[in-house]
Amino acid sequence: MFEQAFKNIDDVLRKEAGCTTELDYTEQTSWLLFLKYLDGLEQDRADQAKLEGKKYTFILDNPYRWESWAAPKGRDGKLDHNKALTGDDLRDFVNQKLFPYLNGFKQKASGPNTIEYKIGEIFGEIKNKISSGYNLREIIDHIDELRFRSQIEKHELSHLYEAKIKNMGNAGRNGGEYYTPRPLIRAMVQVVKPKLGDTIYDGACGSAGFLCESFEYLKSQGKLTTKDLTRLQTRTFYGKEKKSLAYVIAIMNMILHGIDAPNILHTNTLTENLADIQEKDRYDVVLANPPFGGKERKEVQQNFPIRTGETAFLFLQHFVKMLKAGGRGGVVIKNTFLSNTDNACVSLRKLLLESCNLHTVLDCPGGTFQGAGVKTVVLFFEKGAPTRKVWFYQLDPGRNLGKTNPLNDDDLAEFVKLQGTFADSPKSWSVDAKRVDKDSFDLAVKNPNGGEEVTHRRPQEIMDEIATLDAESAKVLGNIRALL
Image (cartoon, rainbow, N blue to C red; front, side, top):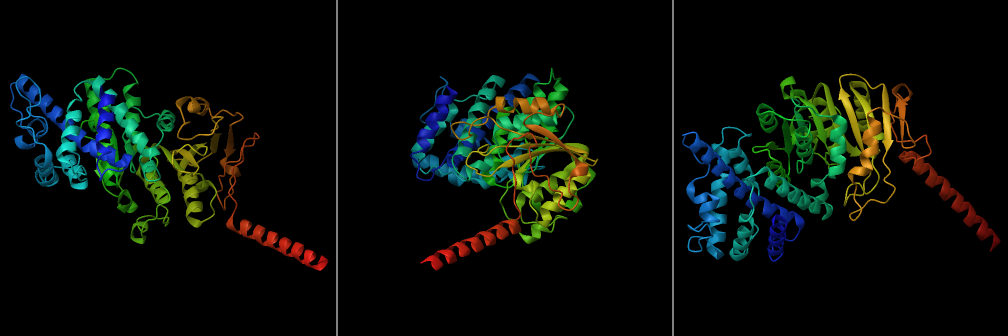
């Protein structure tokens, strides 16, 4: 039933001129899902208060509750068409009254981690793109069919929502930044091994895939007490996200996975000066896939000891700084980071090798990320002791990866198994840190077992080769002319 409801919603959204991509479909579905979820949460809290003989104060005033404007019901439990807004009346209510009212919650909230603040933040950042009030009514009716009350219902909805996020990732260049393949995330979580009591952080959280998968991993570790579950709900997962749409999706994704008031801040992580980060700000675990290819302004670069415009390299510095001593990290980054000769890359590799134990590098094949041609590696490290040995694993699923042939959990099973003992194999090997060049700190992936060698030539080498080829071409042309 849930799957059909999602399909029906997308079919209606396709009629809307303002909704042209999977990103639009997910955004518009998200704000409506959020309000439907909020209504269920409030009803549950009100019922619980009644059982305890207490009075519950609703977050939303009556006219703005889902059951008042979106889905007023008659005594038979069916939609009361006399009270339910539709057409222009519905669209105008949403645009002119509902959104401004919800946006105002940001000022009322006691702090950024409250559900009131999340309401204000979400509805201050996104807009209703459904211009037809009749289409909006149809979508609301489909959303109203969905139920969030039981864990089974939330679980099914979370899978459907993840599928929507995945479709966004396949939708093109811009969509890919929201989606890290879940098999890769799960493998990273298994290597980093978060445990109950850890604080887990992603400062570029996108759709919150790392936080959601870490939550699922910790829930599966054995029987949890009520105290354990409360800790997971409130004091375990932390994220930051710069982009409005990703922020909304992250909030909704975590809610559907069972975290009622996610600790996600809507902010540009990189505007925080590294010198201002104190011990109380640090975390036990960092798991992230920061955006790469972006360029940061000079004033943002000044927040970092190693100045660079490359967004991913600034994030890597941030993540190292945000880890507690003994903290563990798993971070995706472009594979050119391992061998680039620019000052920032060399300095960053030096920082990583000298201040952290970079124990594992997972080399991912092209096609791992849908819609993104860049090849990537995953760096696994522990903060507080220098690197002695780096274990490399060259992932080769034995097929070309793509939209119709994506990465799966089985592809990563051998990596996870061998990583536990840093075992050598045709795809894995170790490099002693003493053998790493102390000038370049080059960590290029070079499989000594006959696998594909990934090399990145220096610009000067390429220029020299071009000059040589030009000279040879000129010589050949000269010989031809002499013969003519």
